[in-house]
Image (cartoon, rainbow, N blue to C red; front, side, top):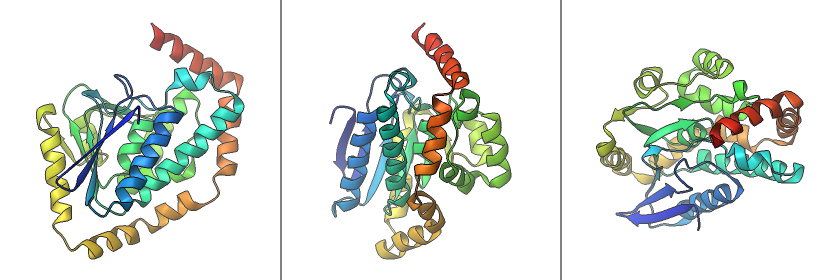
Length: 252
């Protein structure tokens, strides 16, 4: 794999996002992440998954610079892959913890909220779903995932405002579960995984599947219609203009 590093230590699969400094998500990274999740699910020697980013960036979300130049077919393939990978993470029935080691907006936040527990590094970082101000439609299944942790009212307002939260704000809102010093993030994440894995395996996993049943069903539903709406908005002049401005600023 080029952008995902996997190490297995003490029956924990450490899945490291490793695509440049910001871990921006493109097609290849998605495919590799999806395979890593499948491998961890199917490997009987793995009891849990720990999702890591880089110091300063868990993931900056979608790689807008790359996606802007994708063809219509490539963008459609990307969104179908993205929804499929999120579905794999949501349905992963072993314990999963995100070690959010920095900024985690948009797609980075989506990856994190698939997990059972989120430990975020303290500092001048942000997390949240800011797609709407960028001109990207948020699929209902992802809103349901956001609502699962925040509650309906907060998820509704935060999503429509594109609100990004600092670590302590995210903790207060319920978007993350723990805020620690950057030097302690791996230790705190492993400690939480160990809490989960100490329980009787079948009871824990079946309970997780039960509690996520509606979420899984939302991602199992046919995504074609919503992806068509996302793509129609993606190619609209208004969204393309917003994306171009963002990309120009990123390149600077």
